[in-house]
Length: 188
Image (cartoon, rainbow, N blue to C red; front, side, top):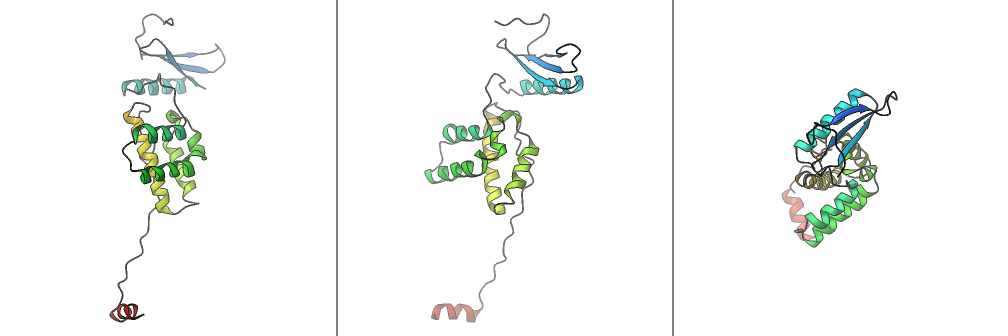
């Protein structure tokens, strides 16, 4: 079992400069299994913020011992292991959305625990330049659902897709046919 510093409880953590005099800082917490998680920072203040984030994740039940997948890999894992009650055609549609709009994008290459709301918003903004607003909303819905399952299974603390601004979908008003238009369509 790895050695731990005396007097610190699991999850309490510490901040230190490493190497001394370099101006580079480290936030570190020890986990229940005796391992530790570290985050590098460029200042002591940033390291303290990262330590608070690590401690908050521990408090929320996030399992920091899990090797974090990329977001695209998580989406495929979600589809294979967690979305098992989908009809085959719906499953194919979900997989198509993942392959077309997530896998090849920068958002798909991000580690699941590093995904931020700003990155999700940038993905939506990029996507709405290429496809219809309804397609953007559908792709976002799949992304949101996959992240919601990740939150429930303690891979991440919060869903980065919750606060995303989506493009509006405009509906054309329905114009009923006049009596003459209706009659002419039956006689044609």
